Image 1: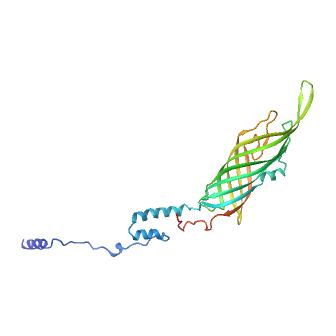
Image 2: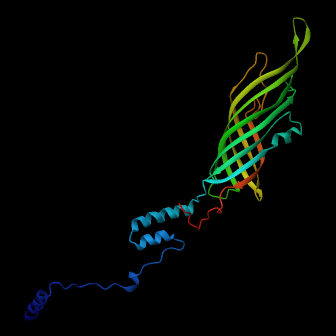
Image 3: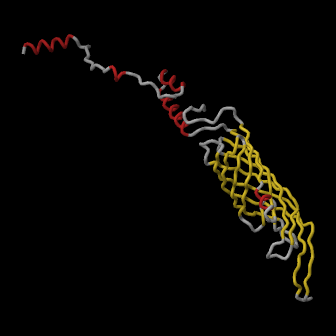
Amino acid sequence: MTLSLLSLSALAQEPDKRHVTPVKPETNQVKPPPKGTDERIIQQYITGDSTAAMQEARRDSLRRIYKRYPRLTDLSFGVNFIEPFFMAFGQSYASADVSATLNMWNRLQPTVELGLGWAKSTPDDMNFTYKGKPSLYFKVGANYNFMFKNSPDYQAYIGIRLGYSTFSYDVTDVHYWNSFWQEEQRFDLFGQRSHALWGEAGVGIKVKLWNSLSMGWMIRYHNLFNYGKNDNSKPWFIPGYGPRNSSLGLSLGLYYTLPLHRSSAPSSTTPSQP
């Protein structure tokens, strides 16, 4: 009993004394940041702004996963030559064009196409010869590159286009059987003029051949919005579109690409600057 009272008295005389559990040295160490951490994030941790540092670290992690290319990545000039090639093997019409495509962020690619189309055909199931005079057409649109995380040298994309052309044509050797006169009659229609507006949607790929030279192809579905009709004829062929009743087209071209930035493409291990 006497010992207990002495203990309580000693505690009462030392009211401010605290008992602290010792900390193990290895649990009180600051771990080094992961290799490659941006210097700004490290400085934010050092100055005590841990919330901002964590947010920046998250953004930095996303930049490592989703590569950010410059807004103006490159500019490509192309020549579409597939239909003149087919014409050498018997096709009766052709459209050929040059194009310019701006690659933005290696993802969105506005494009312009300017070309020339012509035709000369006597369809097997028709009673005339159609001659489409060389006429201009142009298209505007854009591609969306699904492989935007990878190198611009290899692309897989979808694209849309709006096309327009004004053109002239002749319809000759038109013949039909006149049942009243019981004889075949023939006539010609020269200097017919027309115009056409259409839309296109398609899928394509582009691959690097050598240095700045690439090749690409695109399968296109197109649909006529409007075209000019004459009193005695309708256009059989539309420059840039093809036969009026067709719905599919194919383009194959060579491209020369000019880079629009000095730095190389971002890698997955080097943080990108915002």
